[in-house]
Image 1 (cartoon, helix red, strand yellow):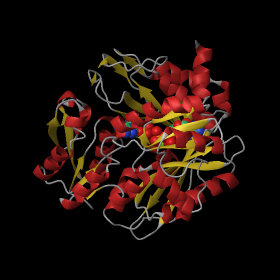
Image 2: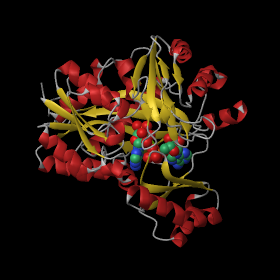
Image 3: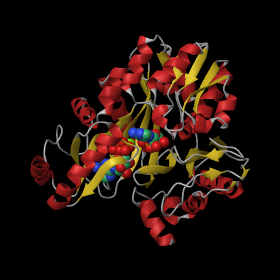
Length: 447
Ligand code: ADP
Ligand code: ADP
Ligand code: MG
């Protein structure tokens, strides 16, 4: 096999997900964990586990020195970063290179390029990929922002160039709102991402978020693995994802997929990645950003293509050629994923605590972070698991999801389980007619 021992610089469901593939391939795994996570399933399932610090992510999962030390102590020959944490940190990738450890992902240069939304927009324009109309380069002052905003036209999204996870963007309707939002958004961007660069983007009023999964080898071959529809969102973060998108006909789909490939070829990207696009009401699409890592919602792509994206990441990181050509990849049926959050579904406040009882459905793929007795820690992202189903068509997938959600029981903490079920029953969702506004509007009706 390509690697003997892989360290997973992450936690929760994605750490377990990566362990599963490694076990199947006969690769040993090293889990790193914080003191708060000592009893979590991923720690027990890895071949070796190393504590890398206290609960605060900054002192454990985000501490590059500690992670590298753990990799050296355990003789890991590669590091898989999962998503979030260090997965899009170019400094970390360079450290891996210096230490002779393979980073399972793209190059530091690609991460840097795409980590800046400003730089990414400019690269994509060069590649002939349409971007959301907006400002070029960073905004240097409120005055400059206001004057550019007049040119582009309100409403606008004021965005942090380094933003992620739905954080660091603010919708503004006029010069007054823009002036007031400018400093606070900049500060937020600085404190969250260490980079206060801002830019403006035209606000797309009834948009759909549709993204393209791509894979590229170091020999220059690029393929797509179809699209994912991710328009069911709360606070600009995804809650339900599916593939294929019910919004696209075959012609538009092909245009989107080929555009994504063109963008990826232009930046000479390697490994797996996701090109995110926003669609307006007329089916025009614009590049939003690229995520240079495995995505939370990658399972729906695996379900319709039959591929294992973690295995593909390992192969590509080891320098192997893409093991198949575009024409050999076909999509089959329909897949839906629901994200189970430990949170109040109305306020979105996290709900940490102990899982007192957990009953799992039998008809679904379950990528879960927790088991009965697990502690949901307040220190990390409140997503505790994903329920994934596959059906012959979209209706069958929805029915399977409803069944799975009915069987699933989580006691001890508050979750969004009922909300997920209600989404599956919603008429607009069932018809496939929904935009990124859907969930907010639906929540208002439910109350
Ligand atoms: P995806 O499209 O894969 O859902 P998200 O942008 O929602 O991507 O982020 C994936 C995960 O990474 C989420 O769990 C989110 O909380 C986390 N994440 C994203 N950006 C950051 C960040 N800058 N700092 C910490 N966590 C982040
Ligand atoms: P992040 O890095 O936080 O994932 P994105 O740029 O990918 O940020 O945007 C996240 C979500 O925010 C999108 O899926 C969409 O719902 C919303 N959004 C972003 N930009 C716009 C825009 N210009 N107009 C309307 N909605 C937007
Ligand atoms: Mg995004």
